[in-house]
Length: 303
Image (cartoon, rainbow, N blue to C red):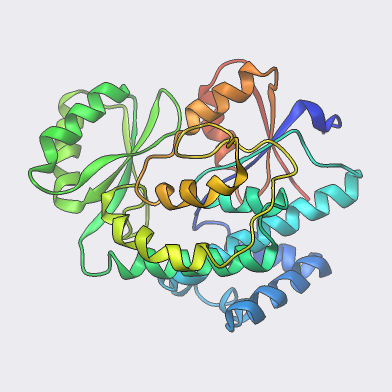
């Protein structure tokens, strides 16, 4: 395991739905994690420990609880990693989508309590503003960004369809109305796409379908206290650190409807001489994505 915190970046993934068994295992194994889930349950007034024992499909359908669950488990794993290895704050800390909120909590820019409140409301609003719309997301593997951008333009036909995340040169996520996505899938096949993966949610994140959710989120975001992060954070929407940490609110609002610039984030950190990335969370997602980026080492934390 990497020891020198000045030479690593800690990374946090966003939403995934295949890790609930592992989360339950960690709750049984670590009293700290169980304690943190009780704390989160009190904050949102809902028993997450009970929910996590339910069928996976039932958990997924309770979309507003997924985000607090993932923040809680990732934050808890980070705390255990710090305690076990006597680690201090790493030089860089970044997150993909929801993962950016986790990074802000772990870097002490946002308190844990406020972080839970924010992601809980984020989940509610994302669901609220898309529940009457047939929308979704797909992962496109093997086509260049400019080709996918053209495909989105040709496929949307007065609907919403755009790039939602640029994970690597080989992997790009699109989001929007399902009819437009289906048209895009057919075009991708004509361009001999390597693979198209489903994302098992009926939500279209990081596109203009989230404009209203972003606007409504303001009232929650401006209630919380922001502090200067204790390490360098590069933000999803522009792959930059803020000169004034107060601007973090603006960037989190833009994250609703702008694409995640993950590939740019990793490249910029790499240019600063950081080649080691430690993923903390309930599943190895970004570690796999980062394999497409040359000359970096990604590790997944097992506690």
